[in-house]
Length: 208
Image 1 (spheres, helix red, strand yellow):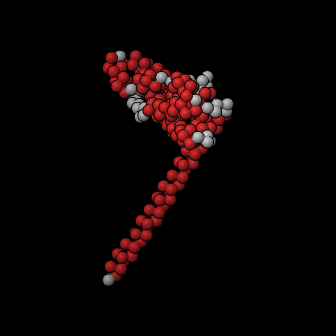
Image 2: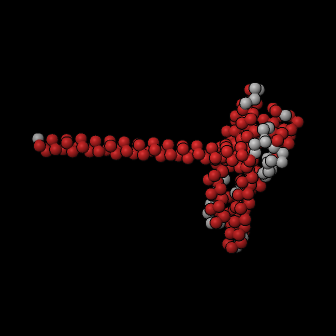
């Protein structure tokens, strides 16, 4: 009887200890989630302020010309294509491959920086459109702000990957849909331009 009582007591203590440990892990997870949410909120705020401070005069698609830099999406896709990297690796001496890969990564980084700046400008255009009394224009502006902001957030880890790939030419790198995300933002810009100013819409794509 004493043995059974002792076993029961130990079992209860173990259960209590396990429950406490689970509780601590749960609180740690919640704090970690809150921490990352706050970090993302700070990053979004900084991105928004940076875009507004540099481009406060831009309020519509007609204002894009001269403020954005055209980005060749297909050229970017080629620069970060793993198949192209593998082809170069097989046909170039190791030292030459490392040099060429480094140049390609820096060129890709230049494209990414230009696209990120363009996306910041599209955020402003979309924000202005959100307040339009025309429902279709307001909806298109909302979608463009969301797409451009998502792209700007996505660019942050991509920049780190590109710098790593440039420093370590043997490291693998995947754009994982970066070009597609930018394409969506520019397509929305064209659509918004067609709604706001059909004459200027044709120039939107060439500006981005």
